[in-house]
Every structure is written in C-alpha cells, then in structure tokens.
Amino acid sequence: MQKRITDLSILIVFTIFFGFLLITGEPLYLGDSYQHEMQFVTREPVYALLIQFLRWISPEHHYQLVIIVQNILAIVTNTIFVCSMRRLLNLKWYLLPPFILILLAPHIMTPIASATGMVITNSLLSEGISYSLYLIFIMYLLKAVWSRTVLGRDSVLAFVWAIIVSLVRGQFMILILVWFLAMGCIALLQKKWKQTAILLVMLAVAFAGRGLLVKTYNYCEQGLFVSTASGKAMSVANVLYVADREDGEAIKDEGLRGVFYEIYDRAYADELNYRFSPDGLLDRARHHEECHDSLNFDYFAIAAKEYVTETTGVTVENYQLMMVEVDKVAAALMKELMPQVFGRYVYNYIAMVAMGLVRSVAVIHPVLNWYALTVYLLAIVLMIYVWVQKHDSKAAPFMALVLLMIAGNATGTSLMLQCISRYMLYNLPLFYLAGALLLIECYDIFKNRKGRN
Image 1 (cartoon, helix red, strand yellow):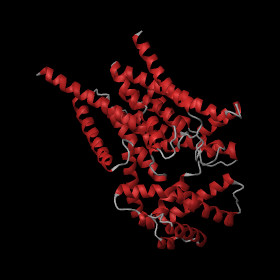
Image 2 (cartoon, rainbow, N blue to C red):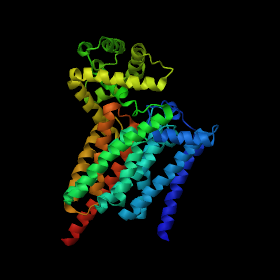
Image 3 (cartoon, rainbow, N blue to C red):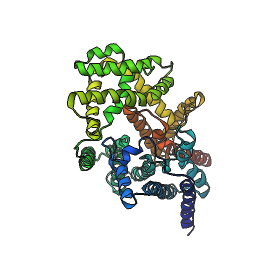
Image 4 (cartoon, one colour):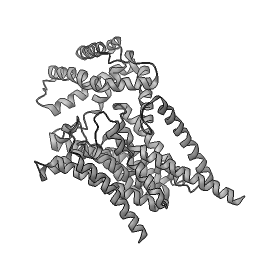
C-alpha cells in the first residue's frame, strides 16, 4: 500500500510540473518546426507522422494537441522511470525529491539558458518527445545490464527503443551502438560467443532496417526513395569553416570549384572562418557555433541551390528533390576538400566535442569548464573504485553507460552539427543521478568496512 502511495505521489508531482508548463505556455513554432510539419526529406519520420496524425484529428487545433500529447508523454515516461528506479535501487523516500528535481533539470534549464527561451514539451520540435522516449531506452538498458541478460526481454526492448528514438532524431543512432557495446561486453565477459554473433546480426539489421524505413517513409510522403537528406548538408559547414581559399584548387570540377569560391569569399568577408576565431579550444568551438548555421543556410545552401538548378534543371519549386541534390553537392565538396583541411578539421572537431562534453554536465563558463573536467575525473575514479570494491554495484555500470552515451552524443553530434545545449542535456540528469548513487554506494562501502573493524 505504501509503495502505491509513493508511486501516486510521484505521478502527482510530474502532473503538476508538466501541467503547469502546458497551462501557462503555448505551442512554440521554432526554426525546424515547418520541416517537421511538411514531412521534409531532411527530417526523421516519427515526429512528422505524429504531427500529421494530430492534424488529421483536428486541422485547426493540432498545434495545441501536439503539446498536450508531449506533456502527457513527459508525465508518463518520467513517472515510469522514477518508479522503476525506486524499485530497482530500493531508494528511500527522502531521496525521491532530489532524484525528481535532477531529472527535471533539462526542462528547468532550457527555458532559462536557451536563446529562444524554449520550453521543451511546448515546442513543435522533435525534442518535445525525444527527451521523454530517451528515458524509456535507458531504463530498459539499465535493467538489462544490471540483470546481465544479453538477449532477455529488457535487452530486446532497449534495442527496439533505441531504433524508435533514432527515428525521432537521427543523432540517436548512437544509441543502437551503445546498446550493442553494453550487451556485447556482457556477452564477451560471459564467453557467450553465439549471443555475441546474434548481437552483430541485430546491429546490422537495425541499421539496414532503419535505413529502409526512412527511405520508404520519404517515398510515401514525397515520392523519393532516399535517406534523410540533411546529414551531408549540415556536415559541410564544418568543412567550409576550416577551409582556406587555396584549398579550392583541389576541386576538379570547375563549376563546383566556383561554388566553393563564392561561398568562401562571402563567408570570409563576414569573418565566418576559423582564422577569425579567438585562441583556445572552447573559444574555437564557440566561434564555430556562431558561424555554423549561417555558413549552412545563408552561404552554402544559396550557392548550392543555384548550382543544382544550373546543372540539373531542378528548381526550388521541387523543393524536396532540391534538398536531395543539395546534399549531393555537399558530399562532393567534402570529398574534394577534406584531404586539404583534415588537420584543421580534426582540431575543430576536438574543440566541438569538448564543448559538448562540458554542456553535458554544466554550462559554458571559465569556472564551470574546469568544474566539468573535475566532475568527469571524479566520476571515473569513483566508478572504478566502487566497481572494484562491490562487484554487484548498480551505480558503477550506470555511470559507465552514462559516460558512454555522453561521449557518443558529443562525438556523433559534432560530426554534423554544433553541440548546443538542447542537443547535449539528455544525459545531464542521468550523470548526476549516477553520481549520487555512486556516492551512496561509497558511503555504504566505508560504513561496512568500519563495521568490520
């Protein structure tokens, strides 16, 4: 009876919090919202299909329906996650308030820290559901890791949810790899070679199946059997940022070389180039972040569209096909330029990853940057210590998974985008929850040792 009352109390807390956001807020139509609503080939299918379904239910009020669904989903998933963790970790009642507060951190921080003041669950963006679904994935993955069952129910459900979340946001294809690495390590430690082979097959099927689903969706919606056509167009901005004008000499196609010079000259005149970056790793990342979207949308996209029209006859009236062709232009430019800019690109990539790692646990600030480094080192030391002292620890593998997901998210996102806060905050509450559990287990270890003495 007491457990049911506790679960009900958790549900009430989340209902009050997200209910308040829903009642006091309104649908936020932001930069990427139009692409989701119009089922662009540049976006993953799940969120676009949700909007399409709700628009079919109520063409006049579907925006409001979207944020209602998003806030209800947040209530349900956060409640399920906390109640599940409470049972699995045997959390005392007095630990639940800070546990809940930490879990809500992204929803509290984003309206305050983001430039748009966005409320995650009121925004018409894929983040409106991806933050909630992310918790379901990590819940099942934790249960699978703690039970050390490679191909059990929880492992399979974690696998399925990883694919679903990746179909909401492409950056989370990394979750499929996280699942594979976690389950693969357990299988190898247990010397279960057959299960390891099955995991490899599942990994291949996941990526191939996901690709086929995306292509089928784009064919049904836009008549184009193509993958999500934005990855290369987003990535090329990272290459253009670190390019020098003489790098264009490596581009064999004269027309494509002309596109590069047009982009470079305009961008350089506006100081959207690495040469105008302040010294320092994170200062480089910040300058790149300020340049990225302009390089992509205001410089590359305009020149690339003109080039596509001149060379293929495709015009912006056929916008979806145009975006596919623009992606091809981006791929061609990167292929020719990458050997010339590789060293600069790697340094810039490291800077962006560093920015992502800081933002996964803190905000960018000269003091907090060192704080982030300190807490990472502390987390690693505590994780190793607890794992050595307590082989059945739940906190240590929790932290290992979180660190793996932080690293995967930062390194994966930096390949295409900039590591802005709303892309990085997914793991912030999980990091501090795992850290708190490590401290609790450390205390228990010291207490038990003192008791034996």
